[in-house]
Length: 228
Image (cartoon, rainbow, N blue to C red; front, side, top):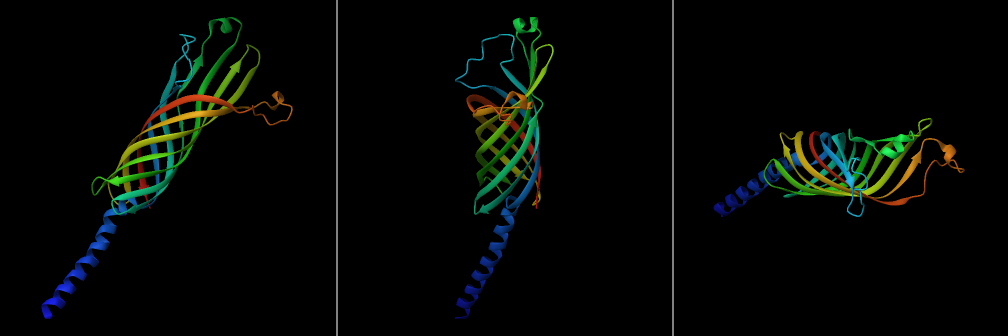
C-alpha cells in the first residue's frame, strides 16, 4: 500500500512539473508581438497581361521592402495559430518611357506606396526554438503615379485589392525576442484610381470606377521582433 501511494505521488508530481515545463517551452511562440521587417520587393504584370508592348519600359520594378508588423499567437501543443497585420512600403519605382509621347512633352513616374496586410498564420514547432509556418490573408497596395504633359502635372494613386500567401521560419532567441525569414506572394485583381484633383469628377469623389487588374508581387522578408 505504501508503495502504491508513493507511486501515485511520484506520478502526480511528474505531471505537475511537466505542465509548466511544456507551457514554458511554448512561451516563446505565445502572446502579442511587434516586429520590424526589411527585404526585397518586386512587382510585375500578372500572367494575363501582355507587358512586352514596349521594350524600353521596365517589365518589373523592384526595391527595398521595409515596414512594421503586429500579431498575436497561441501555442496548442506542437502547433501555433495566430493573427497578424502589417504596414509596409518599398523603394521600387520606374519612369514610364515612350519615345512618341516624350517628343510631345508627356512623361510619367510610378512609385510603390504603402501596403496594408491583414491575415493569419499556422505553424508547427520544428524544435524548442524553431517555428515553421504558412500564412495568408488580404492585402491592399498603393502605387503613386505622377504624369505631366509638359505644362500640367497630375498626381494619381492606384489602389489595388488582392490576397497574399507565404511561408517562413521563426527562431526564438529568447522568450521575448525572435528573428524570422519568409517568402510572400501577392496577387492584386481589382483596383481604382484616386485622383488628388477632384476637378476630374462631378461628384467630387476623386475616385474612378473599380476595374479588373492582374499584378503579381514577390517579397523576401527578414524580421526582428519582440514578444510581450
